[in-house]
Length: 194
Image 1 (tube, rainbow, N blue to C red):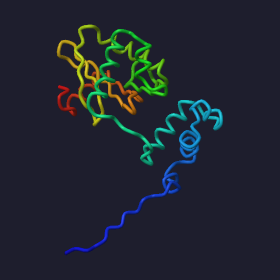
Image 2: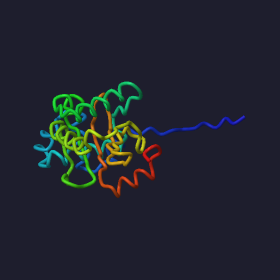
Image 3: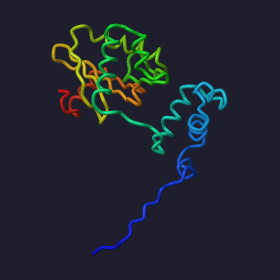
Image 4: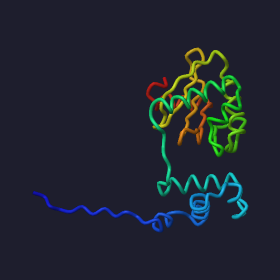
């Protein structure tokens, strides 16, 4: 009989915060402890609002921050279906209700070089992207790197992938892959994408 006792060390809040850079720590504490908005944090720290969002995101990931990740099943599918339909119809108001106010979207190039931030800007981008696919596009759900994604095909050819992070019933981040070279890589690595 093995009577060895397994001891697991649980880091304290101080130890977790020590994992962050000084800038990440400042943004994280102002956001989580004092509920400051990103604009307020940017003003206090003399940083850009987008930079504060990124510092918070990086810090949260580094310490395994207080995030509730994607809910399986019907609610997640409702968000994805709602996003897809609203974007295809050009319904900015409906998209803004689905997107988190601080949503961030990245693309693999093209007309958007920097990340897009905020529900209004990301909603407009989503409408442009889905319009680019056209009415002939076949859209379906899948997973890419463990995240919810939409795959768009035209005449059986993969033309786009939009990966989504969904937290507490809101889409908080989007990554779109539209570059044909990168799409070929997605097809090779993602089951069901071919």
